[in-house]
Amino acid sequence: MLKKYLFSLIIFFFSTNFTILKPAYQIFDLKGKATTYEKLKETAQKADVVLFGELHNNPICHWLQLQLLKDLHKELKNSLILGAEMFEADDQIVLNEYLQTLITEKHLEKEAKLWDNYKTDYKPLLDYALQNKIPFIATNIPRRYASIVSKKGLEFLEKNIPEEAKKYIAPLPIQVDVTLPNYTKMLEMMPSAHPEVGQNFIRAQAIKDATMAHFILKNWQPKYCFLHFNGTYHSNNFEGIVWYLKKANPTLKICTIASVEQTNISQLTQENLNLADFTIAIPEDMTKTY
Image 1: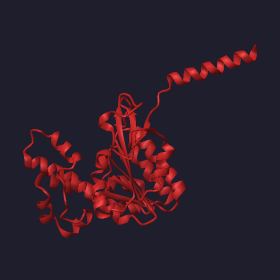
Image 2: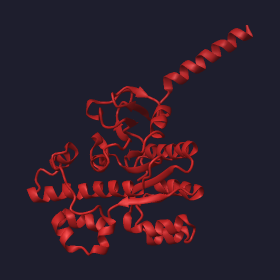
Image 3: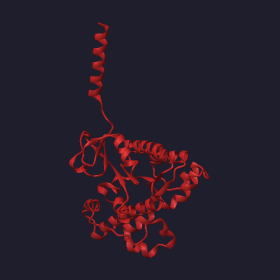
Image 4: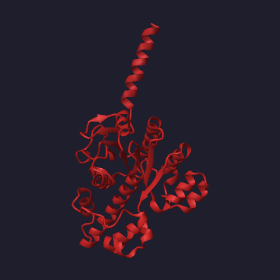
């Protein structure tokens, strides 16, 4: 009687838990088939460059970034390099001084242009790099230069900023393909904008992508893996950063990860298919970090 009771209790427990299970995310492959974190990790550790596209305020993205960092470091040891959109190239010296323990975290927070969600979302990544002596590259263009492009265009930037400043930007002039779908989608979101305003906005996005690709390539070495963190739109559809990386080095093995939010994460919606090698679907009512 007791065995029968315990068996019934176990069956009830498992059936109840499967019924109320609410997964925080589901990973899909390029074809939209559900896959696992383990498969993502195995693919990432064989890549030259991994572009982890995040939703900036999504805690699941940031938690998975940290888990992937830890797992890649466990497998690759000293053959790992980190980089992020969230740190601007002219802050590299401050970042290096912090990672070399020459300055305190207080100095870093005071002197680097850190994002408002740095402490919750990016500090864990930097802390891990600090503890494990992993290089961390500030890949993004200084925002003041992207702002100039947005307002006055690429030609104005090239002609007017000093040569000293150009070392923080991808070599000018850069090629911009305004017909790439990701860029045209941005333009569609600005239907009332003057054509030149829209074109400059695209070029401002492009110089960010080009600069991130430039500093990834500048710091990547053969037989190393460069794990880069960026907004998902900078690498979705194998465009943006990917386009500039491939243009410079067509043989580079790149693994892209996209992040999306959906009402139902059991399968990808049509609009979220083919975004990346792996797409992380997260419930749209997930709590936000800001």
